[in-house]
Amino acid sequence: MNLILNRSIIIKSMIAGIAILSLKNFVFKNLSIYGQDFHDLIELSDITIIFTGAFFVFGLLLAATMSDFKESERIPGEIASNLEAIKDWIYLSFKAPRTGTSDLCKEELNKEYLRNELITITDGIVSWIYSKAKDSSVIFPLIRKSNEIAYYFAERGVDKEAIKGIQENTNAMRKQLTRAYSISRNNFVKPAYILLQSILFIVMTLLLITKFKTTAADYFVTSTITFLFCYLYLLIVGLDDPFDISSGEIDVDLKPIDRFRQRLVSDFLV
Image 1 (tube, one colour):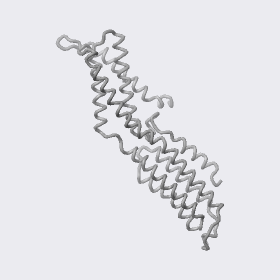
Image 2 (tube, rainbow, N blue to C red):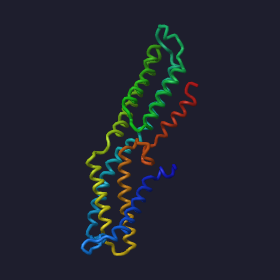
Image 3 (cartoon, one colour):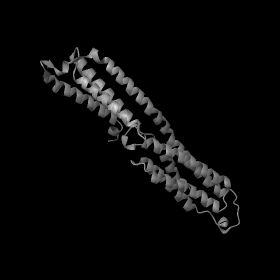
Image 4 (cartoon, rainbow, N blue to C red):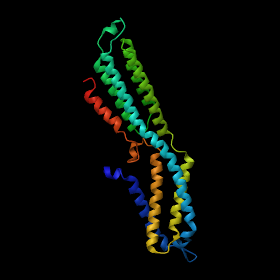
């Protein structure tokens, strides 16, 4: 099952190629208009310029979506690094001398509270990234919980550098998650998708009514061009939302956050 999911674009494109080839050979070759067969209406040499232009447009849109995808690839690692830094600042708070004379400054820091808070934040971020909706009303209140750790330390006279470090990494993490939210929610402009779909429809239609010199060329060119255009279309659609985990192989690698969570649960303030 995982193999199928991780090759979904190739499989869908192959199915499209086989479908167009079958439609042409088993349906269109039996149809005619005024004595002219449907599958011989146009010569291949007459439409090569259309295929060239179509590939050019697909290439431009693919380059545009790739730029966002390359940026998205860095976000999980940066979020994991910020969480790791917050964890280190919490460790420092237990070793650095504390200031203040209030009763709260004299009491021992609650390890269980700090551990549960950071695990809750990490689990919430992981769940949000894996979610389909990417609800802003969930993630931004969750990030504020990290500042609550800073407030907890401030009330108890913890070293100011630790408090400052937690706040700086929280702000950096907020920017990264805001960018992930923006990339996920703001899809490619709708007219661009309409253009892609129109080009795909035109190319498929032309393939159905184009005459080739040999049967072998008919089978090979029709299936190959259909496969390539369908693959490019599905690739652009998938790259447009790299945080859509349900898209199979076209998503960012979330291993940095997953690995951090494993380390956090296994050894943080145990």
